[in-house]
Image (cartoon, rainbow, N blue to C red; front, side, top):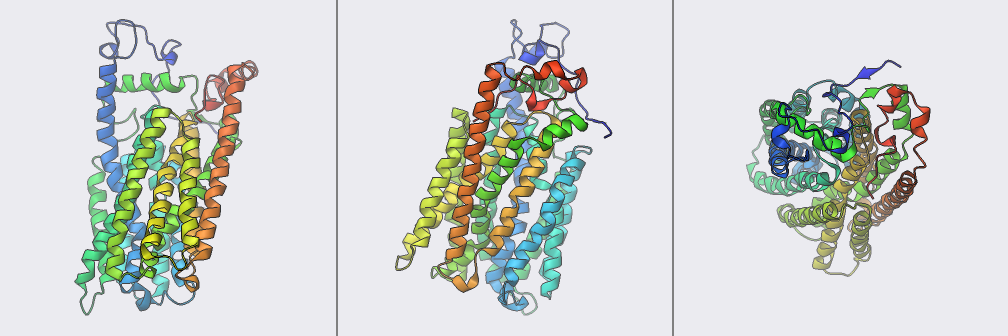
Length: 502
């Protein structure tokens, strides 16, 4: 296999690999170091704040629009789309949901291969502009076939967004700084859910003889997305070594921080046969991906069908739209609380099992809802969304915490999101209209998948705990005796010095 060299800053010496660089008055990082060679905490805090401001606001807006454009079909469905295009015939609505994921899943890994070779600012903004156009076109369809075709194209252009954002952002932070940030970023999904309900509620009054309210939902949201895509091309941050937002001194400080976290010895900047073998045979990538898939079913299926579920509780269409908002607000609060506690304790797996337990209580209530009040059923929805949304971003952060090296993180992020998005296909088909209002299949399958994901999380925690113990005893040091010098510099987290997060 041909070797592809990634762009990178000069490699560190042995002192820098431990987070310490020799003091030098001519060093570009001298202003960020104390007299003892350690990184200046004040300079580090200033750099972190700058990175936060340059990355997350624009990524947050991008994913709000991506998620909003993905789920707006569920709001359009109860505003006239269903009868006009015959989505109530058989499983047509479920197929329309599935169509999005048919292309989304196939193109996530190729997208992360492309973004590694081009500037993220160009790639992500181009995708955003194009999926906005596609979403706007859905407001003009007059046939079911056209709707499905456009949903396929929407999935194709949105495929690279989440894995790309996870990959790019993970290159700027230490492992235990990342969870709270990725969870705050994932609040974009609850903002999109709440805003989608609010926007659909507002648009309901725009009906004209030639344009039904559901058409305006697609047209307005698509136009806004494309407009923001143009603006985003000028403000999205690129790779750490490329970004124009950091000067040379700040880039050096960033490099030293990352080296202190995982070590310059744990790099994987070259994609060759050795590196590809380490990637494909890494159980963490596969367990992390199936964990994400199982846990995501609850959130994705709930997002698709929440307006319909609330409609079945006895509210009218506009009332159901409005009542999605407090559900998403509660989910955002749980997400932020879980992220803060997880980063503070430097622990992930226990929180994932705890969140799965909260979801279990919610689904148990919904499965036993017959004869219960509307408030009882509404409370159960809060538990499902709160638990599911708290731990979904934790799955992404945990896997990235346990990866090291450019290519390893790229493949891990795209593979996890690719496999994880099979949850969208599962979620699209488990809520059967004939089972309304009980939806026993939907709730049962979502609960079973939640615990499938939790079992993967428990297995991954046990395996990395065992691996850490072996490395502490020196059992993995033999790897350094059998590899060539080239491969030793390309081991990623397979290097014996790397320690995994539980």
